[in-house]
Length: 410
Ligand SMILES: Nc1ncnc2c1ncn2[C@@H]1O[C@H](COP(=O)(O)OP(=O)(O)O)[C@@H](O)[C@H]1O
Ligand SMILES: [Mg+2]
Image 1 (cartoon, protein in one colour):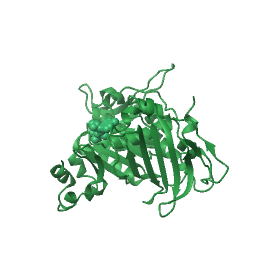
Image 2 (cartoon, helix red, strand yellow):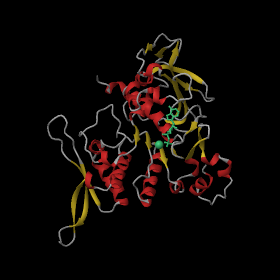
Image 3 (cartoon, protein in one colour):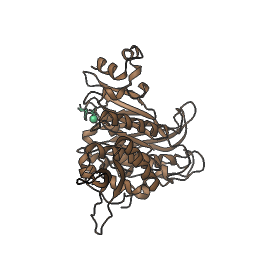
Image 4 (cartoon, helix red, strand yellow):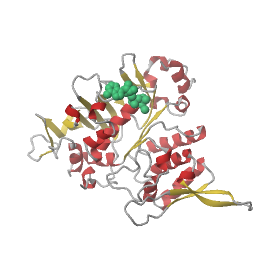
């Protein structure tokens, strides 16, 4: 089945402000039973003990992303089905996600809520709603509605209008259909491209060197979670973007002079590979020469750096970029350089959510951007603004965030 046309058809450059997520509420999903909603900004750093619930937040968003690209079953396949995902404390087998987006500025414009039931291990979207909010945060129009178990899209946002169509497939989202439907006024069309260009990374150095098809399928993300499709991403960059990529890589690794992707040969399963051109001394001769170093011979850190920087020079850029344990495999100077790139991407409109285990990293980001995940003895997971915690706020402002985090970690 061709799903490409079903992931939202709005042109990538529609000229409007890209939406960004201002708040996520997660209920009964993995570690999160019913924590208070999580406020998000354009740049967010999530820290917390092992098993506290950092990935739970990203996985909730990624589940939604995978359901939009594919369907709810495939989104649940990476867990042994939806049963694993529903919080064990829950009596009834369901989870809920509620997202709010703004279109620039703090004020949420859209509210989307979703309930997914998992009786008999098969996910079933049982409730879905998409509303446009007025200045007071109340619903002014409703584009997706559910009643008596039936979901439908109201393309003009009006419940009394006869123009509506049902979405009967239990594993598909009405959100995809609503984002496709053309409408003249306030329309949820921006939400389609938002998810098309959402990226979730848990980079794997081995996968980054594995090679991939030369081009990306249109329903696939700009880069897959482990980074295997990096050669395809590099192929999407035009000449100027490649020059910018190399300039950015050079700031961190001055020897690097260029990037190459091998040509695809005939056949169905051909993989292409990328290499970086490095300047180095050559067999006793004077001076330095440039050599292509294939991905599998590059350092693991270099592979990670190339992947993240390639995403950041792409146009249009990712709308949402989530990176798990961003500091993995990177030296301290490189971490600082990458943080600077991620923060400028956030300033330019990419919403960034990174998780970390590095207190030292906290010293290099605005303290307001830190979200701390804590789990109480009875298993309750909470997501809080780090600076909102009284013990943290009480420190002398000169004490770096990382020191406060380590001192106050429980
Ligand atoms: N279905 C579930 N019900 C309750 N808790 C769960 C469920 N699935 C996972 N967990 C909890 O979530 C923890 C993992 O959370 P995660 O978000 O991956 O942590 P981290 O902060 O390390 O990324 C597990 O150790 C477990 O305690
Ligand atoms: Mg984790």
